[in-house]
Image 1 (cartoon, helix red, strand yellow):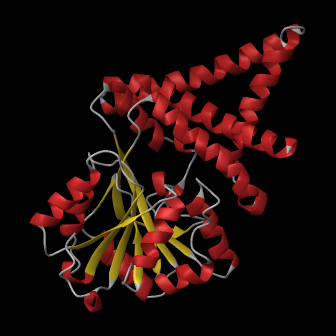
Image 2 (tube, rainbow, N blue to C red; image 1 turned 30 degrees about the vertical axis):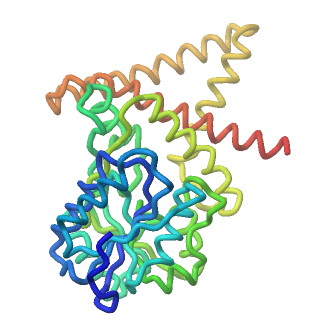
Length: 337
């Protein structure tokens, strides 16, 4: 890759864990080239988990035509996100690290805003909001993107729904000084999801602050289909429980509802075989749940004039049950061991 830019001139290193992102990696790189921060002071360090598609070829092609941007690709043999972030961070030469995903597109002011707020000591970790877009041009992909940014799906996660700058518990990516990141211990490579949340919990415990500014924006491409969405949220739920064992005080109501709801649904389903009262409660509960989701989907369909949003309830159900079942399985697996 292009390494012509002198390392001494690098201020910000954008660190990117990556695996099989041939469809979006150039979109991210193009957005970095369009930053209103001097490109000569930016480098991109991509930690590739041994991609099997055309990702590396796409990166090389981009680098050949954009020699003004220093791009460094390093291997990530463990093939996990936290290992990828840590590997990229250690290879980075900038004093400031800006975490980015290969399927995200930062707004033109992203880097400048992050650096300004860090240098003003507003917080130790700076982040922004996601503008979630469909991962494909299908109805179900559009419904998934809408569900991921909807209150019923996102559960009130600030970086998905807020319009006010504020101190928060976590941000999805984050920008921080490299020495601070290393001092905290970088990302926990034993966690294969929720690694950002766990890092931020350690940062807060060390006296740090996290700032979310809605002027800092990036486009995030959601999963394309329900199977991919289910795998994603199963993983989130599974690793969330493992993180909570270390930081139980970080649990929020929006994270507790899915496993509680799924647990109650499973128990009522089991006991309904013998109990008319349980059958009644199960029927009433599920009917109310489905009615709320249907009305939400209908409202978004009419309000946004997008007929695909009528499928939004299927995406929200997938999010709730996959997250809840992953959390429950992680809990049961721990208590059996």
